[in-house]
Image (cartoon, rainbow, N blue to C red):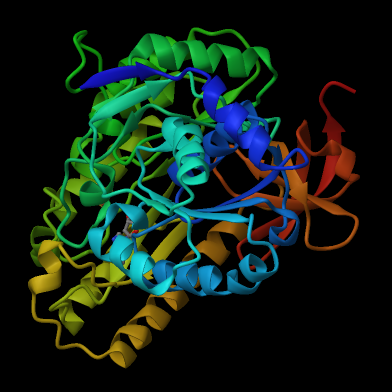
Length: 464
Ligand code: 5AD
Ligand code: SF4
């Protein structure tokens, strides 16, 4: 694996300045996971480094970039729909540059489709192109031809990319890229390439900078954070990394995602218990409650092993909550398999579930399996799962009433005159307060709940 360092591309900046009559504006939209959102922040940073301003509507933009997700077919269709809607804009402004990048653009059949059916898309590049974006734009402009990259994975980590973060108090911090797990349904290892860990020094430097700038919540990102450190010259695992980061002084909290149950160690759970900076919430995707399907999915754990982990965490970490991802309708899922998933969901008592109907991804192993269950049956199973989960979560949330908790105020609430604050355990409370509180710590008394949302009243705001 190679580590590269970003450097400013003065030549590309000149070509761009000459091409646009007024300082150009870029619109960057990211689909999908937090890793992609973080890549979007870097795409914006790199564009600003070569003279772009950032805008948030396509009509104003001189450059439109869709940073795409390939994890499910539905996400891909949405991107194609949104690209289709840009055709008119391109006709009225021939200087407009339209780019498609990210996970979808790592798939040769998608690049082919863009080449043939979307001639007004100027630029196509995959997940490894962020640092080279200025050079690609310059090439598109100076040659006057579309620039479509054949997807390749270059197995590198690029440090010191400029970044324009969306928030001033919550930040994403990738600690590793790629995935080596090859769960049989998943396209990620094909599009994001092999697992690469960042050097701990680089992570620590970025972390320190965030804390110094006043960021209050830092989320460590990786497809499988629990296998952090493999391939580095120094022996270090995820728990060691977290302990290293927690030595930095400041008033911040750390979240992380995603943990793969097969690698979630007792050492990590002990670290969560011991470190006050770590949120007491674990996103631990189980995918299915059937051992037979877990095997077919290549997940490398059994339901019993998963439950053991949950039990251990509950013993060590008072108040810990869990969330999970579940796939409904994996090829060959029987009614019996599905009922085992319901049973597991009841046993664990997740606070939140992210549920997905299986989506066939070409190139993955599961795509070759017979899948006789109809979509209607899968949708009916999904309804049952959601109903089961709602019953559990609504009751658990309601039971929290009466507690006084510390929250990070993160957004305006749905009800006018309220804001939303996130608890350590990842639940959200809505309470009457002014929006100027967004980004502050507050203490809130929980008075009740509406579905999975807590409601409360403000006790006090820190720093006032
Ligand atoms: N179909 C449905 N859901 C999927 N996921 C990943 N691949 C697929 C697929 N082909 C889900 C998994 C994963 C989450 C990020 O997306 O549950 O944990
Ligand atoms: Fe996909 Fe499995 Fe890797 Fe997660 S761990 S990105 S589900 S292959």
